[in-house]
Image 1 (tube, one colour):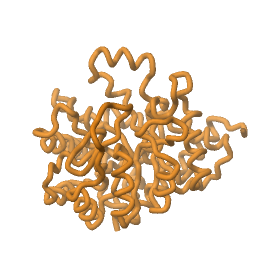
Image 2 (cartoon, rainbow, N blue to C red):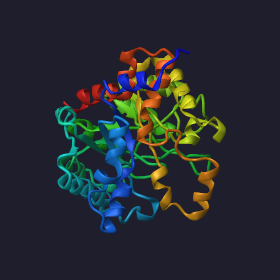
Image 3 (spheres, rainbow, N blue to C red):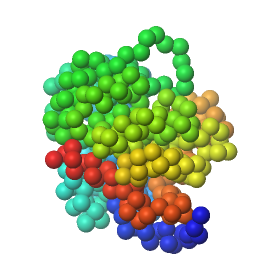
Amino acid sequence: MAEVTKEQARELHDRFHVLDGHFDLLMDVEIQRGYGKTKMIETEYLPRFQQGGVHSIVAAVFVEDAFVPEMSMRKALNQISALHAEAAESPEHIVIAKSLEDIHRARAEQKVSFILSLEGAEPLHNDLSLLRIYYELGVRMMGLVWSRRNFVGDGSFFAPVREGKKGGITDFGVRLIEEAEKLGIVIDVSHLNDEGFWDVMEISEKPVIASHSNSRALVPTMRNLTDDQIKAIALKDGLIGLNAFSMFTASTSAEATIERLVDHVDHMRKLVGAKYIGLGLDLCDDLTKYLPLDRIAKTKEMPFDVVKGHVSLPEITRELMKRGYKDEEIEGILGGNYLRVYQEVWK
């Protein structure tokens, strides 16, 4: 490996547009605003984004099991409303991006752009007409399922569970994919089961992403992708976003490091090339405060994130440089490949 200093890595890192393709910050923002806090992103998150050289964040709208199905729409709208309120309170720092032009303009104005994404179609229930409403509110990406069944299809569990026969994409799911592509919403297959994945590959006509999934060949969990799935996404001209969640990165806590995360990059690069790799870090350490006490104790044994916050993103750049990745490959992985997909789907 080449010797690369932190200063060299930071200089290269700051040249590129850095985009994290999956972050559940809206769950935290909505809850804290409910306690009366304002300017949550500006005060709690923005300094970290700036320290890590981050320009764009995909803000996932995630509805917890306790609110499904009856409260799915309300929780989703509350989170989206929270982001709009934050943007109104901090217009000099925050932009909700609905187009590629919005993303580029925000960077030129030294603001952080946020792209809204549904993490599972539960907020739609089984009403396709609602998709237009979410689109008008700014949703430009959509995970079809979380790790549970909904009207679209079945999710992939984090670990094996006892279950009945799995299903693929439903008739509602087919119509949802078709309508999303007409509107210009990126389809995301992270959390989808294998049967549904292959259905999406047949149904979709535009690039498809797996916003926060790693390689199943390196860590055998259904939440990661097989080699054939990685190749199929590349054939769709989509991308796979690296997930920094420790249990998807390595099999033990001792192995859960940035180096191990970049091993997943190496594997995917050998399969399909760096053009189809991005970041979807799914950083969750900030959310552990909402876990039950017994689960909080377990996170001390195997912490959630191998990347310690967005301030640590230049460490990924440094590791890629050490391994001899070309500048243009690093540029794509850090954010350029997402912008390519947006250019194709949002137009």
